[in-house]
Image (cartoon, rainbow, N blue to C red; front, side):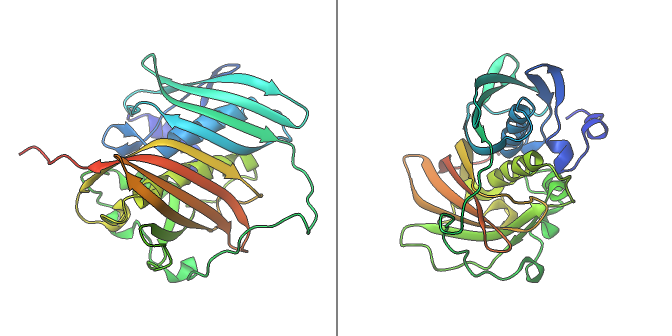
Length: 296
């Protein structure tokens, strides 16, 4: 990543989601590593959603996105985001975003926005938030990893963007499944912009969802001190935003994976606000294979 980039964009969540507008529907951004020289997928998704949001009128809020990771992004070069305006309705707006690097598409995103609607108490329902220890009683997930791991050399980027607390493992996952619970929020306060908070959740949602599909084989990378024995990378990613929230306030994330096989794993995640409202749901399919032995 160019040495001048941190000064231009900022090394925090707001900076990681910031884009340069090149044309009416054309944007450019830079990403940090998720693995050596591979752009972090959550940042690519968050920036693509940011690009889409820049083309939507005030009053529309994102309610869903569906993305496909097509190629690994290279953090040595910028990523260009091309936005297509598929539909502008009175209640719903649709956008398609293609992230391009060196002339090839690396990520494709479809996003839908809507005008908020009032829901009476009888019509508003969701499952109850699980009981979990409060984040203040749990250790900082990044505290012991500031030196980095061989597969994640710059853990400080994630640490600057997010605060993460892992809850103790549970036994509630059905036989054959896995489950993981954690608290997450922006490391710093964010402006009062619902779009920014949605993009922040998109960034955070890719951090540990894919590794949750491999929990039957090893802990997630932020809880390991050794290189991974499995290769995990995101294939696709979908988010549904249910209710208003702030990404700079603690959100409980419950991740579970019902199946793995055929070189793939499937993982689900639910996000709750601290007052018990289900604010978003995430689904991701990942590549899940044994890691190749390191060359001597």
